[in-house]
Length: 99
Ligand code: FES
Image 1 (cartoon, rainbow, N blue to C red):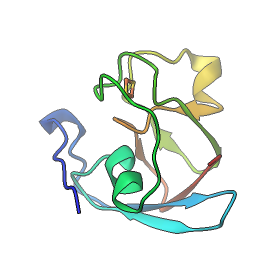
Image 2 (image 1 turned 135 degrees about the vertical axis):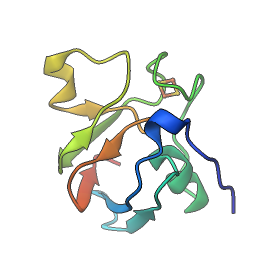
Image 3 (image 1 turned 120 degrees about the vertical axis):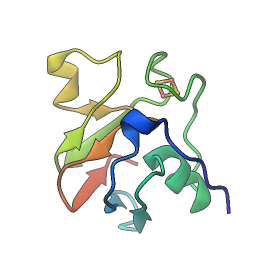
């Protein structure tokens, strides 16, 4: 299982869950791990490139939950529907991703 530590600015000291809308699979995202890497550890591949919130490659839709975005790509309107799982965290206990 791959474990990747986020940069210190993103290393939120709490865990949360993401649910995949298509399968209802629930994946835990530990403190200090990105959503992207938690998805990969569960066998869910999402395209990525920079993994620092700057390129937009990993853009993923979400259906519920409260993201803590932390990316440098999305404008305010886009933040209502999308997040960048390489850097985004969640302010709510669970978020449903459009995957
Ligand atoms: S991989 Fe570049 S923004 Fe996520």
